[in-house]
Amino acid sequence: MSATPASAAERHPMTRTLMILFAIASGAAVGSLYYAQPLLDIIARDLHVGEGTAGLLVTATQLGYAVGILFIVPLGDRHNRRNLVPLMMVLSAVALVGCAVAPNIVLLTVALVAVGLTTVSGQILVPFAGDLSDDATRGRVVGMVVSGLLTGILAARIVSGLVAGITGWRIVFVAAAVLLVVLAVLLYRQTPVVAAKTSVPYRALLRSIATIIRGEPLLRVVMVFGAIGFATFTMFWTALTFLLSGPPYHYSAAVIGLFGVAGLVGTLAAQTAGRLHDRGRSVSATGVSWLLAVAAWAAAELGAHSLVWLLIAILALDVATQARNIMNQAQIFAISAASRSRINTAYVAGNFIGGAVGSIAATLLWAAGGWSAVVIAGIALSLGGFVLWLATRNGVLSPPLRSPRTWTSPRPGAREAATEHEHR
Image (tube, rainbow, N blue to C red; front, side):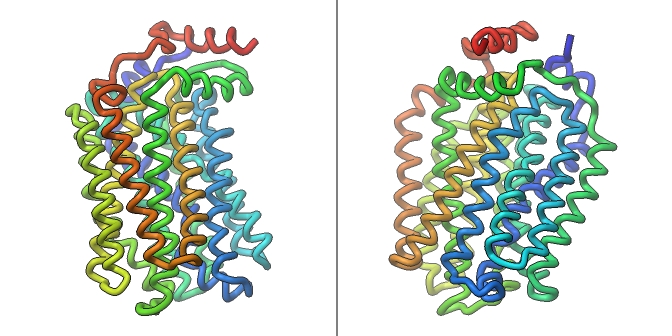
C-alpha cells in the first residue's frame, strides 16, 4: 500500500535545509515567468515592435503557465516527485534557451509560452512541502516555500534589469537556464522518495479536479480571492514598467528592475502569514490584507509623480498579496492530504488566469487612461475582494479548517477508488 501524506511526514520530516532548497527552487522556477517584464521596452526596441505588442509577452507566458498548472501539476499526486520536479526544471531550461536565441517576436512568444508550460515545478514543490510537514508546522513551512516562490517573482525583475543593462536581454534567459539545471541536480540528490498517493488514470485525475472544486465551497471562494489578488498584482507590475520608462521618471531597465527590492522587503514581512494560520488567525488577516491592498493602490496614484509614495505602494501591495496567498494555500491544504497537488492546481490555475487578465487589462488601461486608469481598476478589484471576504467570513472561511470534508475519506486509497468509480 502506498504511503499516506501523514506517513510521508513521519518518514521524511521537513528539515530546514530542505525547506530552504524548496523555497529557492520554487522561486527560481516561477521567476522564469517574469524575467521579461522589466525588459519590455528593450525587447520592443530590439525586435521593432510596439509597447502594446511587447506587453503581450507577459500574457502569453502566464497563459502557458496556467495550462502547465492544469495538466502537469496534478501529476504530483500520481508520480514520484523526486523525478518529476527535476525533469520539469530541465525542460524549462531548454525553453529559456529558446527565448535567448529567438530572432523575432513571434518565436519569442512561442518560447515564452513553452517557459510558462514547463516552469511549474514550484507549484509541485509547494504541496510536496505540505506533505512533508505536520499539522502544527504546515503554515510555517508552506509560508516559507511560498515566500520563496513569490520572492522569485520579484528577484527575477531585479536580476533581469541589472543583467540586461550590462550584457543585453538575451543573456538573462541563458543565466536563468543554467540556474534551473543546477537546482534540478540538487533537488534530485536531496529530495526524499515518497510514494505516489494515487494510481488514478491521468484523464480521471484531471476530471477529479472539477469534482473537488464542486464539493468544496472553501476552495471556490479562495480561488476567487487568488484570481482577484493576482490580477491586481500583475496589473500593477506590468503597468509600472510603462510608468517608470516614461515621464516623469525615464528610468532604464536596470533601474526599473531595482524596484523589486521594495517587494523583497514585503516578502520578508509576509512570512509571518504562515504562523498566523497556525494560530488560527487566517480569516481576520485575510480581511486586513484586502484593506492594505486598497491603501497600496491609493498610494500608487500619488506615486505617479512621487517616488516615495510609489515605493510605499510597492511595499504595501506585495505584503498584502503575498500574505494573502500564503494563508490561502495553508487553508486549502488542510482540506485533503491525499489531493494537495490537485487542490493546488485548481487554486494556482485560477491565480494565473487572473494574472493573464491583469496583464491584458494593464496594457488596455494604460492605452486608454494611463496610470490613473490602472489605479482605479486596482482599487475597484481590491474593494471587490474585501466585499467578498465580508460576505463569507461568517460561513465558509470560519476557522478551524483541519477537518476533512465529505468528499475526503480518511481511509488510504478510498478517495482514489471513489474517483475511479465515478469516472468509469
